[in-house]
Length: 230
Image (tube, rainbow, N blue to C red):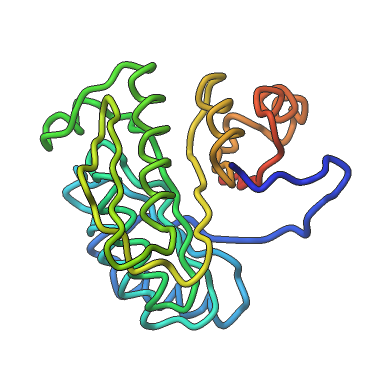
């Protein structure tokens, strides 16, 4: 369940950067992450488009940034679920969270550029299937992040993902929040039920139309953290 807040409680604003992991700018990205860390920026996030030949792998770069920063929280913005199995995402996120002493959050997307995803061997999902797969993925990740006994196993029989006696661990250093980069009524209802935060482009909630945010949020049964990016 998402971390609901009373509707009259306004959290303090936080600030972050969304960066494209272009290979030609690798040294500049590292320098920017260090600067963000020094300046007290809250989040440093990397886009994830594995099919883009100009982009480095997002998780690999996040791991490097975790080693050169001390305070800034790290997140993908957002991970391409159809090309990244949720059990392995859970393992990668928990591992990096341990190594960075609790500075990792999970930014997750259901997929969008289906031709490019299919070209990389991923599934081509209909809208309803994308909602189902995202729901299953969050359940799997939450299950694998829970502290477990040495012989405990996790089983999950979903339509899109299955676990057959998976051994969880190591657990993350803190409760990893799941932020979704989604839009649309069905996705936002799922977000309100299961996620902790919403990453949305300013094109969907333009500053000159504050009512747009209210309209989208009406689909969420609880209030979650919000990140609007330009």
